[in-house]
Image 1 (cartoon, rainbow, N blue to C red):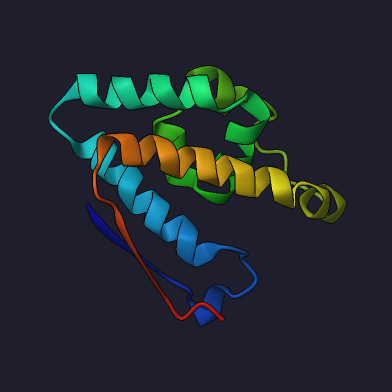
Image 2: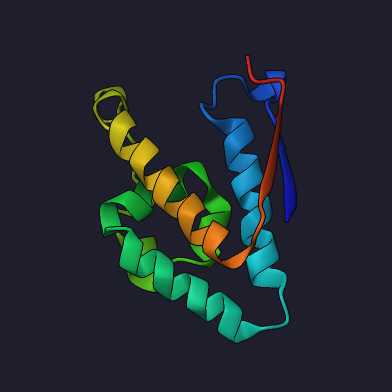
Length: 120
């Protein structure tokens, strides 16, 4: 699977936007596939790997992930933003959640090539 994410200067206030675009492209590949069992398998593995708070944090940065994660994660504090202290204190948690998500995707799509452009 080849996906790309480009850091857009017009949305420079969005952290990790290039990575989020690449992950969104993977999510679109999962949801647009003909095999519903494939998407169900990925959904189950993500539910097993990520806690609700981690999944909610990822959905905040990668809205396309909302189509894959379980319904109970979508409803947790829906629409609530994150304050700056919560984001600064949770950066390690975010990195960990991204690693778990990528590992789950790599288990189904091998190899995955992420092309990230203009990361300033």
